[in-house]
Image (cartoon, rainbow, N blue to C red; front, side, top):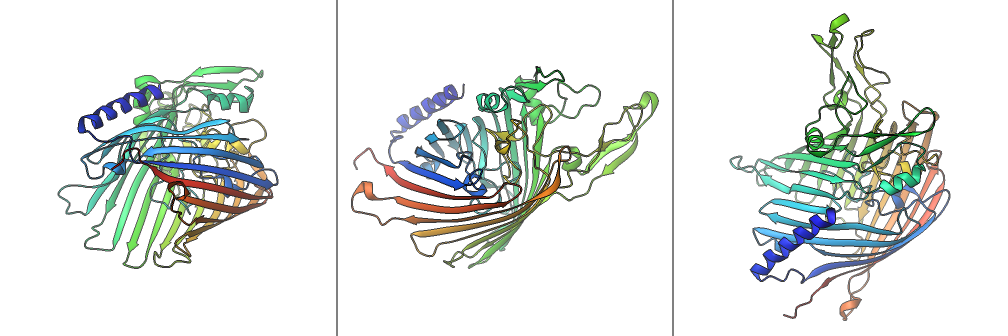
Length: 521
């Protein structure tokens, strides 16, 4: 279905360009890449594996050949409308798939609005793409989900605000592609899903006028949901039972505006599907020669973390399911990713630095009770981040779709698709620089203490230190066309501790970038 949609959109765009007599297939960006990784230990170290849009492997030796061709929307920046498309494929060794279509998309822009059909790597918002540990909701750790996405990707100034207010955001619907991997990983013995549908939406507001002041404030809300499809749950006798979740138009509406209930919910109904999200805030200071930002990412799985209030005051007897008093429970404001980003563009040896602190131990408390006829109190704890009782949680192809410091299911050796460590405390540091015009480096260092989950806590907390040193060198351009655009990248990384084990790895990547020009001018 997704390929039919992409083909249709491409046909429309080619026709539009033909009418304008524009070379739609001219000046295409291409990228060819060869990567090899090797490690000593149980698997590849964290920062050689994480935040690569899922094109990675835990195997101690792995690699890929990758080819990308793309016409970016920026080719049409001078026009009121624009057309873009891309195809990105990889032939892999010791990955979850032998052949990966990483990206396949077409998109059309009219003024500021963009519609994208297919799989495309979307960047994180309000965080540094290279140095951050990752967003908690819409991260860059898992493979892109094929989707239809309507977006306002760049800030648009609201008329009449004198450039003080600007907005951007998106809304998308799609379908996950890891059905076969789920059945293979679980061996059909533990919970898995098929034909799961996907929804995401986000909105961001920027307050500040760059022409008058050097500070600005960005506020955002990201939300996502898994809905529809079929969930297979293990029964007490060891058999697997299928539960058909609501999809279609009704399912899409309930994903857009959370409501209804799941197939197993009866009297106490929360919301259909697996709904989650983040509140975001970022303060920016941008002087002429330097700048910094302070930001926060607060994750939530239900109302107790979304609003920090949940209704209580239910009656007794026949009124056990009726709120007879205006009483609410107040939940603490603890779980958060806090960040500090420093930017010094003119300093070659260190021009960027990011420090982050992640705390996810609270999860609205260690107790959950739905009000009933015996006890009317409503206590909405045990949020169990990234997990769900019907769906396989916030993951795609075994990788969490948020922050990789939540331990991805791909690490599990028990064939269960679940995030087995979501209560954690972590400190993360990232540094980058450009000592010369051809040399770029980045350093990552992360300390983490994991406690497992409320449902299955670790007997003793597990610690981990993960390090990365990576350098990219752009080779000297030659006179011939095919000798230009070569980059060599090397990385050393390690994990040490009881959470991820002791792993030491190396990764080498050779990249060729260029522009294909078919027409002679």
